[in-house]
Length: 224
Image 1 (cartoon, one colour):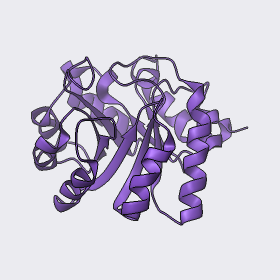
Image 2: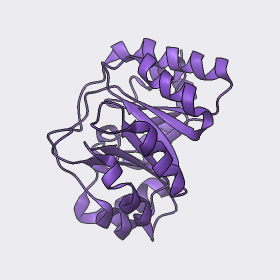
Image 3: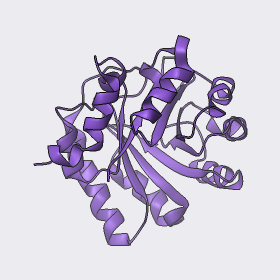
């Protein structure tokens, strides 16, 4: 069954606790939390204080995507705030191998993320070294930094390559895709072999956010 991870970047931050309750009520299993530092990407979003403020009232799995230049400086703070998974970008100015170990030492699930123009081969090198220590591979289908962008279809072959690699290696690593996903293209994503679908604007900006989540949860019906 597909995991739907609404990206709270598109939520109403003036009513964030209620927004979190809404997506949980609709059946979403995860909340995708985009953290941007104004350096790795031009935008700035939220930090551990905000995450901690909504953690207590939510039973969702907190999937935290660090779009920051030096993630090693903040892994403990996000861990202490109550996140469940932390992803770091291979393109950041950081030692990803050490970041993975830092995340695991905090008792959290470790993930790696790659931009649309980064070949899967780079991610595969880390997966070769760490195996199932990497719980998730996040493949960006837009360039990170802002919500509401159009899905880049050129990432589909990379998703299939990742799926083949993971299955052939017998890994349990999940594939997550983030960027421009909606009810019109989710079938393409699932056909390529994705486990976790991140959607922001398509959910929170729709007329019926709960209904959109429910339709995405039955997204196998969208597969070709």
